[in-house]
Length: 156
Image (cartoon, rainbow, N blue to C red):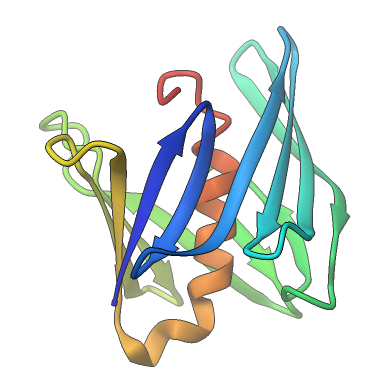
């Protein structure tokens, strides 16, 4: 399954077959970023505060709608922790050797999804590929991408 992630007016939006799944907005100042992730019906599912200090970034969950998403216990740039003891880890592909910014998500050291940056097809800036058997992780992956990528000033 392919999911497109687009950038529009500073927001990120995730689409499947031209149907909106989630989108995120950001309020950014010098020290903090307040990120809000909404579902297709404009209902807030997650709000977090990202604080950047020299060589350290912290993520604090301010609100989450547990009726709509699995409980997220912690988020970092590379990880999302949810439910009881579940987590997904982001790993870059050959980032040191080249300028390849593609990455994969792993669950218990098993690759479950891949994110490719798309430089040719504007406004689609990323494409998420996930197999049907891993769709139970789709919401967590999209929330992680929409939370951490909108917070990256190099992307917007």
